[in-house]
Image (cartoon, rainbow, N blue to C red; front, side, top):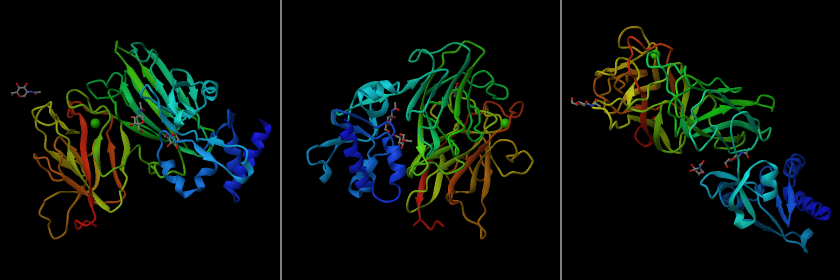
Length: 423
Ligand SMILES: *[C@@H]1O[C@H](CO)[C@@H](O)[C@H](O)[C@H]1NC(C)=O
Ligand SMILES: *[C@@H]1O[C@H](CO)[C@@H](O)[C@H](O)[C@H]1NC(C)=O
Ligand SMILES: *[C@@H]1O[C@H](CO)[C@@H](O)[C@H](O)[C@H]1NC(C)=O
Ligand SMILES: [Ca+2]
């Protein structure tokens, strides 16, 4: 066994080469286990990263094939290595590929095979009062998959799995807790609180399918804490939050200052607790929503989502009494048609198809009960070409008596190619 490790070290040294081998080796061999000729680097994928023809495999996160490795040091052995890559478990949850022994030592549960049967897909699922440093951990309510109807505080402490982790992405696979109170839409019964990272607004209600990026800071000292506070009336709560640790050096890291980060040429943006039927817009929100600029795209068009529930669409209702028709409001000044308290900031927004005056006009804040960059009762498609593509959503702590029953927003976005005379 010792001999095998030594041989592997030599092979690793040879492939890695260069000055960074010291750090790589330290990380690569931390927790590396050798079992039946299967070697599992705990961090990254050892020497393979340097080979361009294996970059393709690297970007494919599931079912990594084992890599047969032969070198002149290893003429008598064939060492099968596979990285601790992501894998799809038999249950539909995603995990990390490793040996059965490593999975049980690290507190996971094996759920199907990966790496052509050389590894097991190890799923990490945890609940109240625990801490995790496992990438891809699911944080679930107590009693999950049953609902939880109780009060208290349920906390998960997220510790960096590696010093080179910059962000934590939270995916709300399930997220149903009590919504805000109906007067001022403040989350004062149930709350989801993220602390230890950049300031993140408290949310509540229904947020299945939403996500958040939490800045994990530099160094390893400040863990991020995720807390569900449940109080007040009886309510069937359920949550399952996937916690993904994102290394600093990756291209899929979110831009700085983005609580939400969308990729792709088109998609849908929704405020937290958005539901046209009954989901009230949350107060005390203040965050950035970013869209990655895809290659050769120069602007973004936004349109309110279809609303199949209400007679008059509530897909964009940010201020006013949305139980009746409310026009769009724009700008930051005082007065009835301005957005002094609650707004969606769309940088230099203009309606598509508007006849441009000699000097093109645009607005920044949009609110009211109709989505348009002009004062209007008619919804419009809105274009912004300010880069990077970034919206900002802000609400204060007051709704009643002027602002009633607003839902927040749901917008479909489509990036616009640079060829359309966009600058
Ligand atoms: C965590 O898992 C995701 C998805 O499988 C992967 O992209 C990311 O690099 C992993 N993070 C770390 C720190 O290994
Ligand atoms: C597993 O990963 C796939 C691909 O990234 C994703 O679409 C799916 O939602 C994930 N499933 C869970 C339960 O996290
Ligand atoms: C839609 O309008 C009809 C007729 O005015 C009314 O009966 C119905 O309750 C309205 N539905 C909603 C969801 O407001
Ligand atoms: Ca308000």
